[in-house]
Length: 180
Image 1 (cartoon, rainbow, N blue to C red):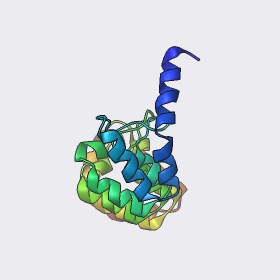
Image 2 (spheres, rainbow, N blue to C red):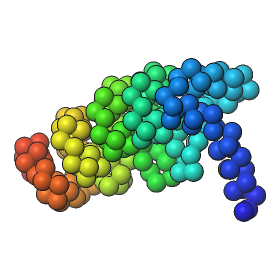
Image 3 (cartoon, rainbow, N blue to C red):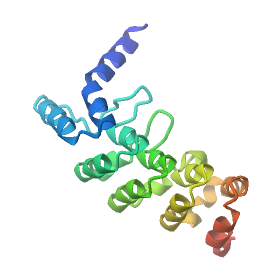
């Protein structure tokens, strides 16, 4: 293990209480951890706490912790909501993958730009992963908040192919026919 890897492991180990609190949906423990470390000027909300450089919000969304996500979103800035993992995935991507629409709604309510992040990789978009999971409710919600016309520069044909492969083609046609 190189020196940089050791530092990364130590930092991840540092955030173990926050990860545990997220998994156990223990907001009081997460808040205590955050308060304790705020005193030493560590911003736990925007910190990379996972190997993939995800934040507590990424982790909570993937773990389907609705209450936890709601509380985190209230404390985070719009910019913090836009943070991506080293795979270029936002927390909204993980919410879309989790199929819990309420989680996605909380994030988008605070930052309307989230459905189009990242702007350069259609397969990393929340809408794309929602289509790939086949969850109609999540797809319907994300279609309603994703400006489809802004996807033109990204080759939206990949969305079409995804909707066909998951039997959601009708939803795609209804939503996009005005832009074709």
